[in-house]
Amino acid sequence: MKILRYRYRNRVEWGIWKDEGIQPVRGDLFGSLEEQGEVLSPSRVEYMSPLRPNKLIAIGRNYVDHAKEMGNAVPEEPMMFLVSPTAVIGSGEAIHLPNRIDSIEFEAELAVVIGEEGRNIPAGRASEHILGYTCGIDVSNRVLQKKDGQFTRAKSFDTFKPLGPMIETDMDSSDRWIRLKVNGEIRQDGRTSDMVHSVPALVEAISHVFPLERGDVILTGTPAGVGRLFPGDQVEMEIEGIGTLSHRVEG
Image (cartoon, rainbow, N blue to C red; front, side):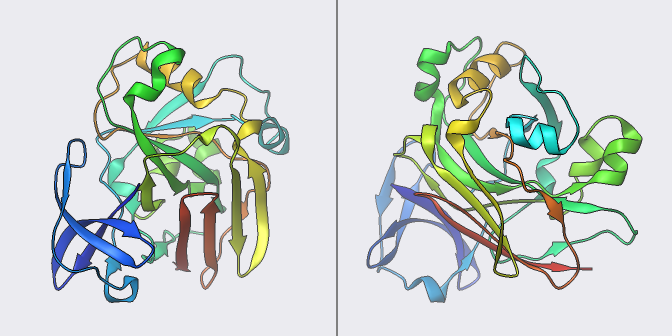
C-alpha cells in the first residue's frame, strides 16, 4: 500500500495511491485508515511530505563507493547523526540554496519510516517496527560539513530534506535501485543491496543508543555519484517501487 499526504481545497489529507487515482482516507497513519469520498486525480492535488518526522536520523558512509569518492574510510559500525526535521519538504517544493557561495550537493537515499516504538531491537525483528519506506534527498553544505567536523548544521537548512512522494508499506527494501537525475542526466544509479549496513542492522544499532519512536525517519546513506546543485537545476530522484521526487533548485 502506498500512503501519501496531500493538500486539496486548502485541506491537508491522507490518501492511498490506486491505479485509478488517489483515494482519500481518514484515520491514523500508524493505526487504521478508512476510505472516504471520491477518488481524486493526482493532477488536482498538491503533494506534501508524507510526514513531519519525530526524529530524523541520518547514516553516513553506508555505501563503499560513496565513502571512497569522499576520501573517507568505511566505518565498521553505522555512523549516525541527527538533523532537523524542519528541513523536510514534499515533492514539488523548491530546494532553496542559502545566500552564500558554498558547495551544496545532493545525495539520494532510501528513507525508513518507523511505525512501532522500540529499544534494543534485534535485527531479526526490525520489520515489526517499520511502517514503510519512502524516497529522500539529503542536500548537504560541504563547506560547513568540513568546517564543523560534524553534520548537523550542514544538513539542516530549510528545504534540505525532501521526502516522498509516498510511503510504501509493503516492500522488500533489500535490493532496490536508487536513481537521481539532474536536468535529465543520471547522476546517481545504485542499489540498496550495496549498503554496508542493511536496514535491519541500522534499526538494531540505532535502537541500542536511543529508542526508535513512531514517526522517526532513518536516512540510510547514499550511493556514489553525489554532486553540486545550482540555481535553476531540476532534480528527480526515484526508488524502485516507491515513486519519484521532483524539485527545482532556487537561489
